[in-house]
Length: 562
Image (cartoon, rainbow, N blue to C red; front, side, top):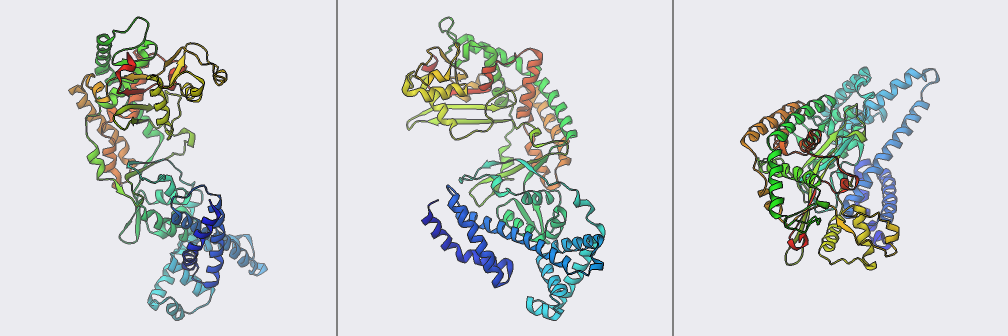
C-alpha cells in the first residue's frame, strides 16, 4: 500500500488501538506497551498488503492476534518466574507438573473469576478491597472464589484426561449456500484460525458456556471470549440464555460407517434410475438428432445440438448428467431452505456449511464435492450464451471456478462465430482455448510453434453445444415417471435416516431439507454415470474429452451450428 495512506490510517486508528489495549490489560502502562506492539505489526502488515477491503476489521484482527501472542509470552514468563521462586527441596518434577495443571486451570476461569483469583491469591488483596476495586458486592467475591476453587480442584483431579490427547478439529470444504457477500470474502475469512474452528465444533452438538468451551478445547478462556464475540457478531454462533453458545453452521462429520451405508443406497437408486428413466432419455435424444441432422456428410453439426466429431457417447455423458439434474429435481426445496438462511453483516444471506474429517481420513481423502455451475454472458442488447458445468471425478479440469472462466467462454463464443481469426494477433486467446481443451485438432499441435504464428486450420470445438436454451432442451427430455417420484420420496427418507443421528437436534430439520431431491444430487448422478459405464450404455472417455465432459454451452445463435 501507499506509505502516505498507511501513515494516515495508523494515525486515525491510534486511539482505537489504545482503547482496545486498555480494555484487555486494565493497566495504563501495559496498555501503552501492547498498543505499541499492535501499531508496529499493523503498520508493517498494511505496507505489505496490496489491498484491504475492510481496514477496521483488518486492524482489529491484527490487534487480537498480537494480544493473544502477548498472553502466551506472558504466561511463559510467569511460569518460569514462579518455578524459580520455589524452594529447592520442593522443585521436583511432580510438583512442577501439579503447578502447571493449576495454572492451566486458572486460565480456563471466566474473566471476572481470573481477576478475583489473581488479586486474592497472588496480589494478596482482602475480599473487601477486591469488592471495592471491582465495584461488586463482597458476596459476589466470595461466591466466585468458592466457585473458582471448586473448578480448579475438579480440573486438577481429573488431570484433563479427556482433553490432553485430543486432536484439533479441522473444518474443510467451508462454503455458504444462498446469497453471498458482495465483498470478496468467504466463510474461511471468519473461521481462519484453528481456535475458531475448534470453538465452532465444541458448541455444535450442545450449547456450552465460555468456561466449558475453554476446558473442552484446552485453551484459556480469554482466547475463547474474543473468538466467541467475533463469531456471534457475524452470525456463525448463537448466544443462548444462561450465557451459553451454540454453533449456527451445518457441519457434516464424515465417518466410514455412514459413507458405506450411503454408497449402498446411492448405488441402489442409481440403478433404478438407469432402468426406469435412462433408456427413454437415450431414445428422446436419438429422435432429436434424427429430426435435425440435415448437415452434410462427415460434418458433425446439427441444427439444435453439436457434439465433437459426431461422438454420441460423449454427447450422452453430458446429456445424462444435465437431464438428471433438471428432470429428477421435482421438489422445490428453496422455500424450505430460506427459513434457515442467516442475514450477515457483510451483506450475505445464506446457510454456512462445513465438513469435519473422521479419524480414518486425511485432508486429501475428503469425499469429492460434486456440483453444478452455470456461467452466462449477455451483450448490451441480447443474451449471448450460457455454460453449464458439472464437476466430478470423471473430469480432469480445474475443480474451482475463477473470474477468468467467463472471459474464456466469451473467447470460445467469438471463435465459433468467426470474430477471432486464426492469425498472430489472436494467438494468446487461441492457445488458451487449446490449453483448456475447448478447441482441439486431429493433428498434433505444438503450442510453442503456435506462438510463432503457425496455427492449425483443423480445429474443432471440443464440447457439447446447444442452439436450444436450457429450458427448451429440458422440454425435449422425457418427464420423470410417477414410479420414480415415489422412489425419490423413499430415497430422500433413506438418506435422511442414515445421516440424522450425526446432526444435533437443532440441525435435523435442515438435514431433512438438505436431503430433498436426492435423485438429482451430484452424488447420485456420479453413481448413475458409473452404472451406465458398467452396463455399457456409456463408454470410457478419451483423454481430451475429460477436459470438457459434462459441459453444455447454450448459445443464442443457431447459425454457429449450421
